[in-house]
Image 1 (cartoon, rainbow, N blue to C red):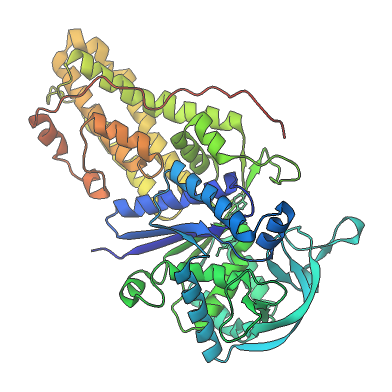
Image 2 (tube, rainbow, N blue to C red):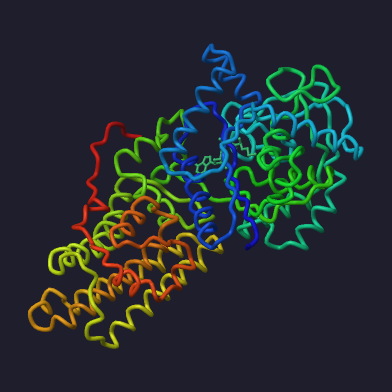
Length: 519
Ligand code: ME8
């Protein structure tokens, strides 16, 4: 059995409903998880909600509801979103769950045993929006002299007795680790940011709070709850059995990939490995900081009212169109812009008019003219082998790019295979061959079925429901990467007497929805 593969998204703050940025991260992670499953690896995929911290406390206070009630309601929307977007997670974790308290308190004790925790007084700047402490030198000044974090969020002066983690002790071990594992932080630009930050010197980190009680209690320290990031990061361990199920834990840990947004790379690439080093646990293999999704080039925020509801989009344009669009349009790792026009244009051009049309034309022609029977071997031509070679090349290109997290490039390569098929069908014109050379028509249609199968298997991680429907129509049951290399499939299926039914359209042509709100 190939190596197990453990992938996680960030866990999302349920202080409001999910937005398109959250959906983007879940979709990307889901496509990667599905891709890894196709390679034959055992995959574990985790997402969820990060429910403690001051931001939750303040939001609940503003809404005049108990914080647990807010967490339950909003976490429910994230869970619902995961289901609607076909997110194939093995666990949707909530940090209020009992096993998560156990895991967080266990890692805490391990850090204490290492001598890395001490009590002191914290005085400094805190951003509730980021749930992050900042040094004075990192701040800028906004309107009215308001101090702002590097993320542009307001910071406030905080002073309280807290536990500290000896982060400074890990400066050199972290730098050594980055040097020995050049792929630990990706993409390159984020790696450079982290290196600069750590090289600039690390100060010890305040890791508990006493001014509120919505968090995981610090062991043997009444009045202290853990700083939300300590418990949040630990979710990655909780989900794979830490500390009680050592078999499960050693199967999945260390994680292969923490997929997160660029704003929280510091927590994952500096604090998290330092906590793990302290607790003497192995470090994850990679942290990938994806870019931000902007609304027509503008940052989405509740105050400007341009936050996009992913469920509404999925409802308007279809889940698979949305998934395809987000992974195709945004160069993975960089920021990308979202607009309704772009999703309609992209989904129509690539899915409805190209891939969908290829499947629809071929299958309906066979259903109508061959009564659904698989085309026979017919009269071959070098053009047939040339097409299949090109399609295989496109699918291989998809796999190698996708495996390297170049998701958009992967889709570009796949699309070259679709184009080649459409060109082939136009040149070979099976509708003309029907009268003039039926033997040749059989060979052309058979070649197309083979090509469609390869393309549909390859694209499954991105558009799982639609590609599966297409594969059902042609009776292609094996859908992993081994099936891509199975050259005998066609003959076996044809010999089985499988009949192709007239197709129901799979990729509808989209039209732009009426705008209900303008940013
Ligand atoms: O940061 N485009 O939660 P969160 C793309 N709870 N991604 C975006 C985005 C956008 N416009 N806005 C946010 C947290 N994200 C913590 C994580 S992990 C142990 C704890 C991404 O709800 C963001 O970068 O603010 C992060 O990866 C994820 O959504 C959750 O953000």
